[in-house]
Amino acid sequence: MDQARRATLIRYRVMAYVVGVGLLVLVLVGVPLQYAAAKPAVVQVVGPIHGFLYIVYLVTVADLAHRFRLGLGQVIALVAAGFVPFLAFVAERWMTRRVAAQGADLTRGTHVPGRR
Image (tube, rainbow, N blue to C red; front, top):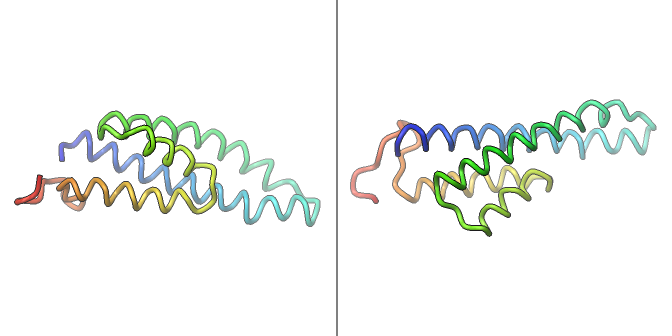
């Protein structure tokens, strides 16, 4: 795998984890505090941050879709991963395995001999 594609995958993976963790904090901590304890501070802080980072995540998904020639269904799944709790982690593993199945050695950024 060339350096540009490898860098694209790494950016996507980082953003998937950041957005996934932010969404979990928002849903599992912020929303219960807001409605059960009338303390909206977590939602007021994490909500806008997650919204901004989700836009950055969408840009990384677009770049990933372009460089790896993803189909519309795959792109829709990755877009949905940013606003469905836990799905960002599942989608990240799925996409990493998909790229690895194409013959990429993700640990060194080189091609595995014998694979296409």
